[in-house]
Length: 207
Image 1: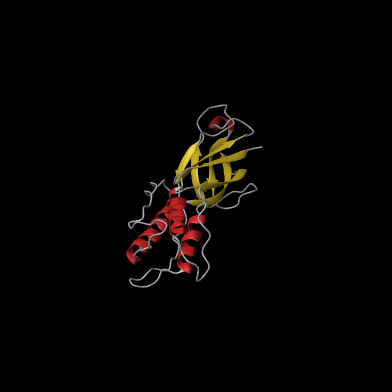
Image 2: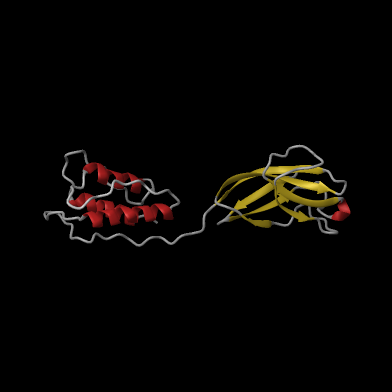
């Protein structure tokens, strides 16, 4: 029984039909083979949604088609394979699912706090520094294929609240870092230098 093999790649995938009942060639009555985006499970005189196809060679004994590569948008898809006989009949040749990834992006650089943050000293993270940190988190999220996290932005002169840094912890945790981020502090708890440094270390541990 014929089957379809799909292999995903970056903004592309490849397909191949194997296990045909006879060699894929015009000499054996084949006209072409291909894949369609619409379900196709029984022979028909016409089909729609053809994504890619290949013409049968004049002669040949291989019961598999040549592997073909197709440029495609990022996502997960199911395709159905077919063969077209010289009598104009389309025959099903298997189905499979494939995931197409986005183009590889460069890992963002590690984060370093601009201000000195260490135990026993006042924490003087400015609004611009904190907002730059959340921007870096979102750069990492894009690198890992995740959507931007909707952070509460810090404002000049306002206090950075526990709920805000908790968002940082959650946004980093989504990326499965090698070093887990710290648990978010409860409202009213002191936000320590150790907490901020653990956030930084967790973000920087992302591969």
